[in-house]
Length: 127
Image 1 (cartoon, rainbow, N blue to C red):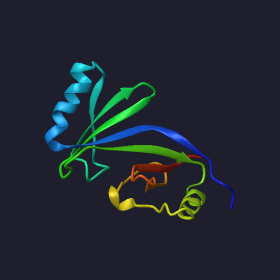
Image 2: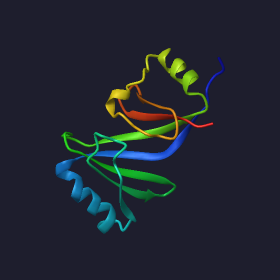
Image 3: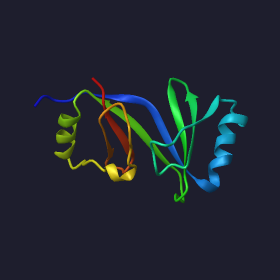
């Protein structure tokens, strides 16, 4: 099996408690003046609302998560070979944790993983 290559993705998700959601959206839209658009969340059953923000070359997703008590930041990674990457990461104790947010109807194969500090990453295969 060849060594997989990894690249950073363009998506960053900020998981925000419901009580702080409207003020956070207003901060990016009204205070900072960024273009903020509400988007569909049907693919992510744990997210009740989401807004996208163009954050330089990245898209910052502001996700309202009703049962969260504090915010969390999630990142995106790409790999050219998801099976090899999953195997390599398992060798250092990093296993898929797809239960953190079941995803449906995506265009690529994916796994959720957590880095050693517990930060969630979406690992997506892109060929």
